[in-house]
Length: 466
Ligand code: SAH
Image (cartoon, rainbow, N blue to C red):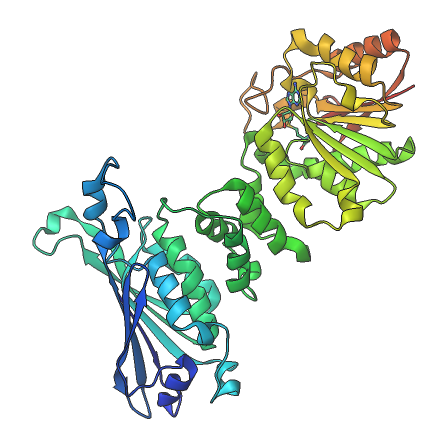
C-alpha cells in the first residue's frame, strides 16, 4: 500500500522539513501490524515527492497472541484485502510516522507548516464500494480537485467488471497538516471495514483530527457514522459536539430523522414546536421538579437542563438503549457536579407503580401514550395520576385527523411503526377528561403546529392541573 505526497512549492525539498523526514535517507518504522518505509522518489527544487510504503503482515494481523487457531473463518482472515487497500492501517501509519506534521509542527520551517502550499496526494488503491462518487463527495468539499482512475477487478477477465478500489489523485493548495488529517479521517470512512472495536476515545480522535473542517463538511453525518462504525450513541455524541456552534448540516438532520415519524414531521419543525409548547406549559404551572416520562433519547431533557428554574429533572424510559443514548448525548459524564446533580435517568415502565416517581411538581409524557397498548392505559393512569400524583401532567399525542395531510403517509397508517393507536381530538379529549374527573385534576387542551380549519393541528396536548 502506497501513499505519495508531492509539492511544487519552491524549494520543494522543504517537504522534508515539514514531514520531519530527510529526503536523502530511506527510513523504516516498525508498526504493530507490519512496517512503514519512507523514501523520496523525487527530491528536486521544483518538485519533491515523499512516499509512504506500508507493508502489512496479513498473517501477523490475525495470528492470535496466545492460544490456538480456533476462531471460525480463519482461512478468510488470511485471504483478505488488508495488505492492498488504503484503510485505517494507513491512517495509523500516517499518525505514527508523520505525527509532528499531523500536529502542524516543524522545527525548521514552522511558518511553512501553517501555510497552504500546492500539494498532491496519490493513492493507487482507495476502496469505495459505493463507487467513485463517494470519493468526490468526501474530498471535493475540502477544496481538492479529485482525479479518479477505475481499475478492472482482474485485467485478465474484463467481464468481471470494475474493482471497488480506485486510483485517486487529490490536488489542492492546503496546509500539509490538513491534508494528513483529511486522509487520517477519510481513509477508514471510505474503507468502511466493520470489524474493529471503537471506544469513546474515537469520538475525541474524530473531533481532534476533524477540527477546523468537519463541522463545515456537508457530509459530516456520513463521515461520523462510518468513522465511528455506526455506533449510534457515539455518532450522536459526535454530531452534537460538532453542532455545538448551532449549525446543523443537512445530512445531520437526515441522520437524526431516521424514523418515519420524524421524516414526516420534520418539514413542519413539529418536534421543535412540541418541545416549546411543553416548556411553556411547564413554566406556566411554575414547575421546578420535573419528570420526563418516556424521555427517549433526551430531546426534552436537554432543553430542561438549559433552564435553571427546573431544579430537579428526572427522565424515565423503559428502553435501556434509549437511556444510554440520552446519557451520551447529554454528556452526563462531563457535566459539572452542580449540573449533574440536577438530572437523573431511571429505567422503568410507566405501566407499573414506581415510588421513585413521587414528589414532582410536573410530569411530561411527550409522544408516549400512543406507544402503550390501549388495555394498559389504565395502568399508566394509575401510575401517573394515582401513585406519582405530580401537581401537573402534560401529555402530547398525534392528532390522527391531521394524518390525511401528510403526503407520504398512506391512508389508515400510523405515523410510527410502534404506535399502538392514534386518536382524533374527540377521542383524546374524552379519555383525558375522564381521567381528570376520576383523579381530581382539571384539564385544558391545546393544538401544536399549524392549525388546519377542518383537521386541526398535527399534535394535541392536554395540560392537567390539580
Ligand atoms: N418523549 C420522547 C420520546 C418519545 S418516543 C420524545 O418526544 O422525544 C416514546 C418513548 O416512550 C420511547 O422512548 C419508549 O421507549 C418509551 N416508552 C414506551 N412505552 C413505555 C412504557 N410503558 N414505560 C416507559 N417508557 C415507555
